[in-house]
Length: 209
Image (cartoon, rainbow, N blue to C red; front, side):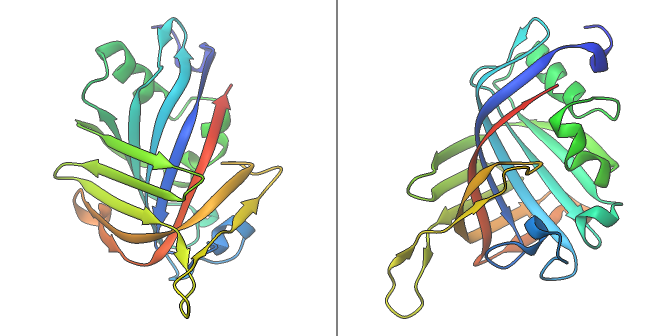
């Protein structure tokens, strides 16, 4: 496949993430996390992408994250889960993209702050998202599942529509905020947690080097 850091790549599509912060997620504004530490599940569906000569269209993958404090303080743990329907070449590409020497948008975002890499997993990844309606489901049998719905007014029950716009954001430029109705992750040690009525985000992504 060649030296990963020199291979041209791009992937764009849909992302959903659930974390343990309150709605709004102070981490997006360089503030300390709500609970002092961070726990998160994120999933992506690539609509268009490539890694060198390997096409990544329609590939799904997820990542589990844990940080002992705020994200910039580092020493986090991460694990990538690639949909088992991906070909061997696609699996190799996504693992390479999570490698410590890769350049590009991913390398400038969460990876350096979570250097403790758990060996990648391969499992069925079901990912459904409607960003405009702020609804999503993630299902990875035996590993993780989450349900996202709109934030609702506590008095009237009406759906609350809110966005975060970060023109120079490392992860997204604009995101719809939702509510993590529930999220369960079971991947051993630090990567086992449950979330309920916490922050969720639904956004487009377009990463490249």
